Length: 464
Ligand code: 4AD
Ligand code: MG
Image (tube, rainbow, N blue to C red):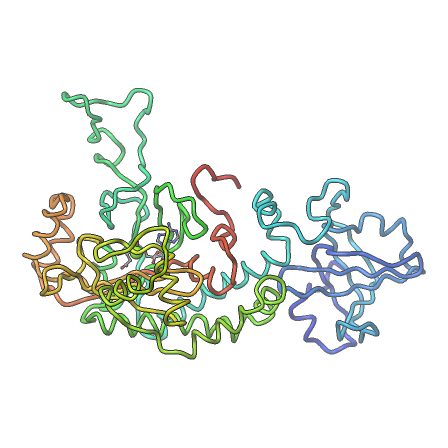
């Protein structure tokens, strides 16, 4: 076995019978009798298993005793045409190596069909299930496709900081980063904490968005994107919020709001289409097991023009709908996911791009419209998800930006470097943020965002 090269199951299943092969993986099931034993082996390279056949004349029951569900083994043998239904080829075993046993009494994944809630409690083992194998392979494919999309179009990947001293969204729900002694922090004369003695000489946090730094990149390199973890300390215990999530934030010089919408729509359709073209085995599994309309829904999005309308028109539709919402809606209120989903799923039956929101419910950096009430925001709303993308054209006028920062009681001093870009060679520019896990919720059809990230962080939950 030693000098043979291991072949992955994904590759093996495409090979013609006749070759000598070495496979390694984890046992999914074992059945048979003392004359013949069939093992379904999975190595994570595909949702499909390879069937291994152990002939009772070579392998005694004693030799196969440790080969139980969850155990890890290596098998060398011959790839042969399969007589059974369900697979074209199988491996006729010649030799076996048992790497690690998995006691059937205590291995938690002995049986199939565990609830998603139970699997969250065994986050260290859930990647071994078919479902999570599919999800994490799709997650990888989407990450790759994002880099490919932007690289093919001349965007540069900009690495923005995770630790920052600014609050990009002006929302204030941030995780603090400090090395001060929490029991006995240094104080100023007025009793407040003296952050000049902290590690960075000022108060610092985990970033909520890479946008502000992304804008600096766009105003030099033209078109950039960030793709990194972002952190929000809101106490939002919903199936669509995480405390640590990944965001993709493109930022483009010389883009107006229309260009921004065109890019966002093309981008998201490209990603869904990439999944349909490259992840069909995994999508088919999720479609069959969880959501019979998944693949149809994905195809629906790639083949349709998104509806574009203003917040004002959207609220009008909601108010006139006669629908009873948990949160009442009127002009000026922030839309809840129930409102967003009504527009998408019930009214238009396709994705919606909503623009020109009231300035009071949006961030300070958005370009102000001439009406004095709205800003050039654009949110993309998706079936089953609600908001999947949030973005805007940015305020490029120095004067208007400073006025807005002051109106919102923000500190022009800590934002001096951002404001400075409007003094030197300012240009119209735009960008948006796609929540990576929201995208994955849509592409996998999962109902809870904690199931599309390997190690979810949410209030009271940072195990594994
Ligand atoms: O709408 P948000 O807060 O926008 C920004 O952060 C801007 N700086 C983006 C930009 O213009 N560059 O967040 C963007 C997206 C949302 O549409 C949503 O998909 C996702 O990030 N998101 C979350 N995903 C999971 N958990 C959370 N707590 C999220 N908050 C936002
Ligand atoms: Mg938003």
